[in-house]
Length: 129
Image (cartoon, rainbow, N blue to C red):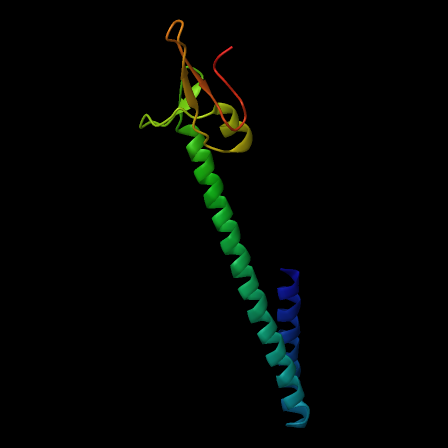
């Protein structure tokens, strides 16, 4: 941002010099100052384009972070696993919290007592013993 301010200050001072030269001595030196002024104004345009691009990137990052934060608030926890409000799931709570990933859990049914446990293929987290 300070670059833009310096360029603008330079452009303003050159316009002031133009006014002085025009009133005091007529046309001498005006072309050189116009060239410098044009160069400064082009630099301002380039810096402005860079700032717009940086702003767009930051806005996109903020939007993605807001989406991520919103997703974290929308999960229901049932039997220590995550489900969406629509009932989609189960998802691994460890992968979601630590890695920001939505990893679907594998369901295992015990032959002994028909109990259900869930395990994550990615991190190894499990609801079982």
